[in-house]
Length: 86
Image (cartoon, rainbow, N blue to C red):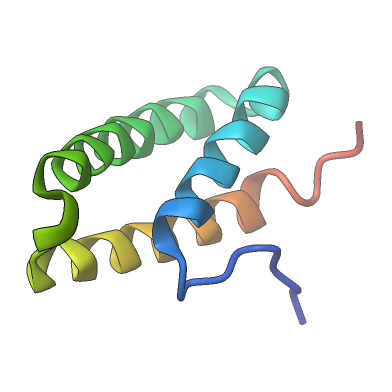
């Protein structure tokens, strides 16, 4: 059973934490994993921008997108980073 440091009730904080963790471990990933991370990071940046623009009037769709992306990022980190020996 995998344990996770990510709390999906706070998706933006989860995404920020994942980006920081990935920056530290990116050089250890395979080429395919780095390409997938590049795609995920672009989605994160886009979502962070949208959240910043919507500010207090965050739409339900954007909130759901943040939660969904947090889950994808959590799965990616669990699969590609947590098992790497530093």
